[in-house]
Length: 107
Figure (cartoon, one colour):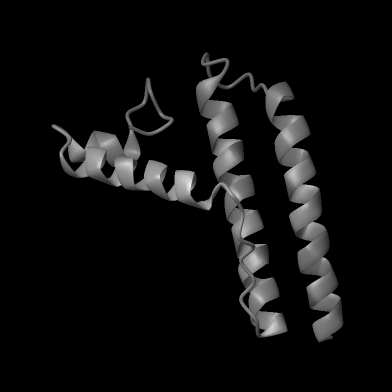
């Protein structure tokens, strides 16, 4: 049973990444007039949640936390730190965290 769940988690991660990269540019809906932002961002958020959840399930099943080191670790950490500092000193923290409708992609 554990092997089946592990295989399912691995397949879910792989398929979700492929869908995220190949389906997002093609995603359009007739329900709103925003051609680019809202539809694609909601799909990206949903796919990211699925991938992260599958990865967490995989780590729990394997009883091991695997985080690969790369040369991008320090630049990514510095970027995230700059975003946290920017949000903390922002004029409107709520908009910095959640965005607003005409700019739904975050701060």
